[in-house]
Image (tube, rainbow, N blue to C red; front, side, top):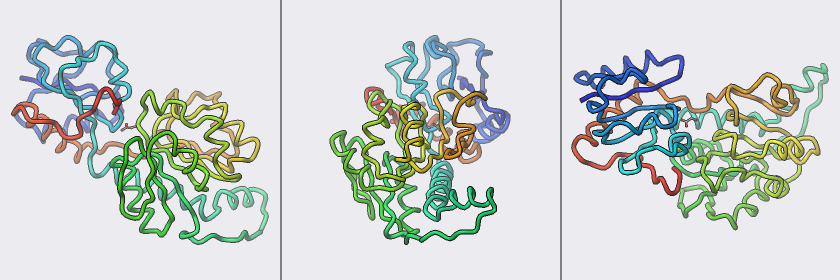
Length: 309
Ligand code: GLV
């Protein structure tokens, strides 16, 4: 049997090498050179063209090469009778936590203001806030959200967490469900989006959500561009409700050159790097998934297609 592989990233060779060494007896078929479709029993893919996964009669399971499965699930021809897994390797969650801590600290310490002052050669100190008095809201409490919570909690921040279903996490005041969102947003001066993109989270951050956030607060989006209503975000950056935003995910990627975020003085853009998958550690996780599928066991990180993640 053979494994289907589709990876549009520029380090696809590094992925293949890592996978080949984790699964030395397997043959990898790189989309679209799939050979005999009846020989493919596992697919490891990222942003494969819609419909591409429909024609493999012996396919046992599919794993995403990233944490998000929104693009996979959006494929109307995705086989519905086989398990689908997202990829969470320990390094990805650590990378996300590093990105979130760096960005939260940037705003917490007022470094965004000092960047502006330096540009004007202006020497002025601003009052500081202790971490225990800074409330940070984490929207999304999956593996990424939980790792961020551990790291932020070690830095002493006051943490709120919000998720679809109830969670209990040490050091985080957790709430769940749509009706509690506004209350969470009202209390935090920094809100971090770590949510999967689903029908429930699409456009979640709209004007009503921004209006709930305190004047002068910050948004960090590490999940998907579709979760934020772009024009509402631009409006609240303009009217001062938001003092700044760091955006790592966009509806269109790469972000087009004429997009307003590139040049917005209150926005920091990063090119979707908050939690890059790490081929060497990910290959070990994927090899285990292949063994599980072939032994008829449940996959780890299996996706509930109805919930969308
Ligand atoms: C990246 O966005 C991922 O889903 O892993």
